[in-house]
Length: 349
Image (cartoon, rainbow, N blue to C red; front, side):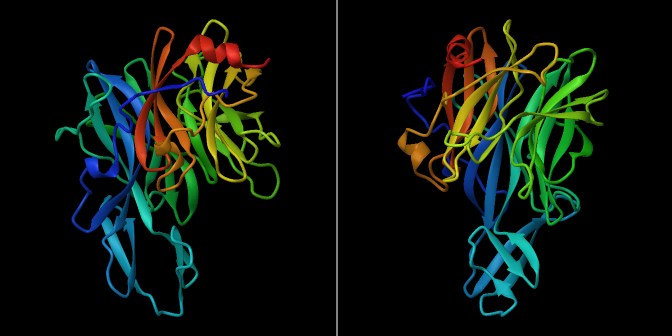
């Protein structure tokens, strides 16, 4: 047993029944992978909410966001020969793929980091435009000076890329558009400039040559990125043998930047590991987890919409303690605490 996470005894913190659907035509299917931040003395979560349409007899209905960020619904007859609905997650009609669920980001706040609720003054974030028509997912939140940087997955028929929005007050957002083109996701911006440049972790994917690896990138302004370097690859027979991707923004320690990441096997079992990166050149890996620091062990992590999953892209840090907010079995939002010292001790140089 290598799991060193201490789970909150009253997990899950949030489940689909705890929130209302975005409109009367939609049903919440899952809550997933919240971005996490601190604002005005509160802990905030930017929860991914995956919704499907209300079921209709004899039809398959698929939602999408229009250019105004409003949900529109297409209905296809089940007996239509142009329809392929053999996959419950993605259907194909007349050569075009559609998702059966789409995601948006919901803002919730808490005084104690445990009980979260929505506030009317903070609106949800929805996909807008052709590159977000199938939703926005899995947001990481990084704060530099007084600006919050929101990096998230943009989904559309054009592919999966990384979008960026910034805010100072969580009410007004500056939409920067796509900063990493398809196929890319799992982008986390460091919360401190290094040599006067922004740094980020990201995950381009290649199904034919290469794989799902973690890369670093640099930027003069947080929008235009270059000098990409591959720093961590999949490893045969380990917990990250099929794919890996960054969690939240790396944590600065005396030993280096501590980056918690997710890794998955060919059987789609998702665990968490960690990388230790050089303080002055994060493309240099000093140490890495040989075994997971957290794996799906609790019943709510093993069973759900998509079981055997722990996945994080949000945490807060105070002293040695990491409060890790994570998605469990692609259905619930949960909380665990970890010790920075214990994680560092577990790594192999």
